[in-house]
Image (cartoon, rainbow, N blue to C red; front, side):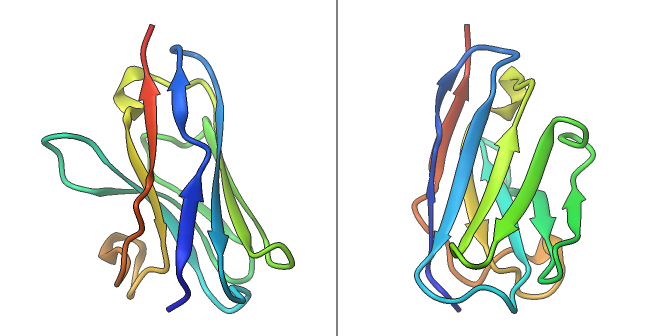
Length: 118
C-alpha cells in the first residue's frame, strides 16, 4: 500500500467547485484509486474511482458533476467537483480499494474537509 495524502478541500457556496488532490509518496501506476467521503452520522461511501488503466467510475450521486483523473508521472489522482450541493459536505478520502470500490481502503489518511454552505 502506498501512502496517500488528500488536499484541496474548503468552504464553497452551493453551485461552486473544488479540485481535490490525492498525492502518493510512491508509484501508483498499477493501482486503482478511489475517492470516498464521510459525513457526520453517515457511513463512509464511495464517490468515484479510476482504474489503473484510467477508466473512471462514479457513484450515481455525483455522476455528471464530478470528474476523476490521474497523472501517474505526478503520482496524483484528482477529483474535480462541480455544481456542489449541501449534501456533498463531508470529509473526502482517497484510498487504494482492497477489492471492489465499495470495499474501501486498507488504510485511510486524514482526508480533506469539503463544506458546501451559503
